[in-house]
Picture 1 (spheres, helix red, strand yellow):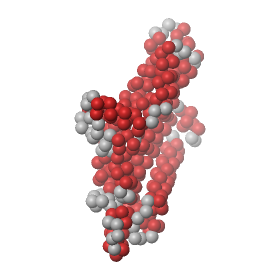
Picture 2: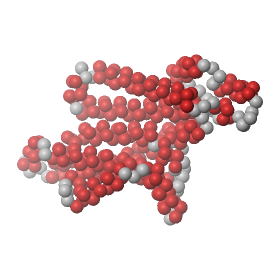
Picture 3: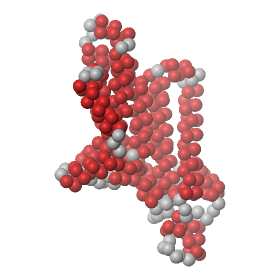
Length: 308
């Protein structure tokens, strides 16, 4: 088990280092000169150069990269190009909002997926199962940005039932959570349905039924235990994806999280803020996957044996 933990920890550091390095150099190559953007058109080159010196972008790229890596080891992500506030403080201020949205979404999505997935399993090839499969197909084909705009136009603008933007009370969660859940539930439902169909055909489940064990205990104890392994992995991956990738939804609903912070920084070429947002998102993603791997290793001893 110790060797397994060491291997996964090393892989985690390699992934984060790769993401940080890739983002750093892509920004320098593709984003242009932030000093030019921060000065009005036609500004004298001497003043633009002073801006570069203040931002630190006048140094060679490799020197900037070295300083950035040294700063990371000291938990210093630099200062924002706009306002000069520490990037780490701004990112840590936004992270709980994204995490809260992610947790609420996962709980809601998992509950809905369990109900629909188990119901579809018990009604396999019947009307309810076909309705669930139609929902899965429609949800998979629905773009999140389009659904978010439609929900805002109908429930916020037309009916005025729910707030359209910002994080202000429990009702603010409704539209973002529904938008993200529609994107997450199809994969969860299909996985639950397939896992339960396979689990219900296992010998130990048929033996439990033969012993006269009530059907609800067969489903929620015997079958669920077997079907839980792929669910643990999938739910963990979905949580990581929300933490690292709910940018468009946060931007549309003006949610004060990592996604909106990073997209605002992209629009203004605020390199340190972009790098900070991506770094925290990458760390959150690999940590969630690391926790899922540990849970998987605990649930399935074969993984620990294969890692030796």
